[in-house]
Amino acid sequence: MNIPKDPAILLSFINTQLRDFYPSLEEFCKSNDIDPSDITDKLSQIGYTYDSAQNRFR
View 1 (cartoon, one colour):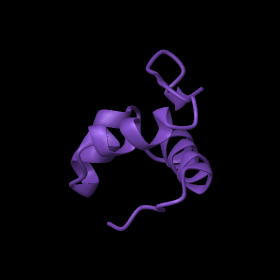
View 2: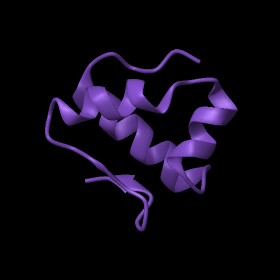
View 3: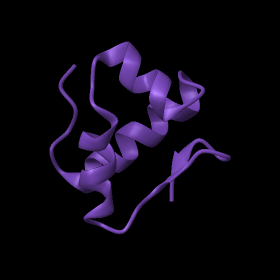
């Protein structure tokens, strides 16, 4: 799966996927063969971290 490269668009895309289809970031990454650090590193550049309790980036 190709994920958006722009961090702001990636944020919206990932949070929507997590809200609508996946119970965790790990499940999303496993299902789409993506390294979780690719997402967390990119979103940390704009000040967001994954909140596992809420299953979203904040």
